Length: 261
Image 1 (cartoon, rainbow, N blue to C red):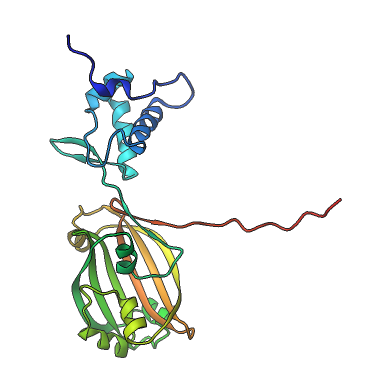
Image 2: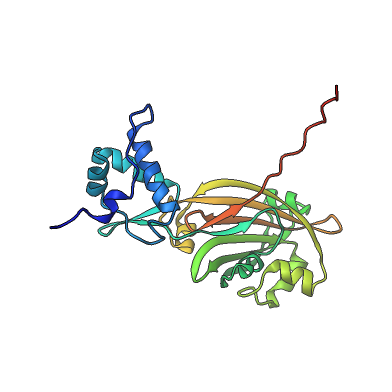
């Protein structure tokens, strides 16, 4: 006698409530992904099977899966099915450190592909950030950052020409610019101002990061300052959210003490 597939009994039953069915299906699937029942890169049941498990329509299942895909928890492979996404690599934004330095501490291998290293007219925003004249030039360094052989971010860094020209002789394929500036050039860093947004990958970014055009990317602007209070490097970072994420702990400031009675 053939028994039911194992996955038929791993999900909690849906409830009769005001919560939409697709939302309940999404959360039942999320539970089994988060607790490891479905490990990274493992295949989820087919849409028809999920529909049978929860006694809901295929449309409901598709909406639940679409939400999980938008969150980066699952990926759909045409002709093969739906799979749990790989665990995303993380970096803590609460500390100023080089990308390679942060990844090495977590046991990852980092390699950079230097796309270009040019002297270009400084765009107004770049000139403003670096506090150089609008008619001045800046050194522009473009690199694709790989973690464990997978492209993760496209980095465009701008520095004043004397410093940028000096970096031409450095091994930017394997070393962080931060490490070179501090260790080799004796330029201690103080802090960085960061702005985070989102952007759709154009053809250039899509090709560099091995994603489809239109894929949502994190877009980060970072201005790094020296310990002497001077702007040193301004960067645009375009990051794949499906394989990489930033973390940040936000402490709650203690409120004023209440008067004692």
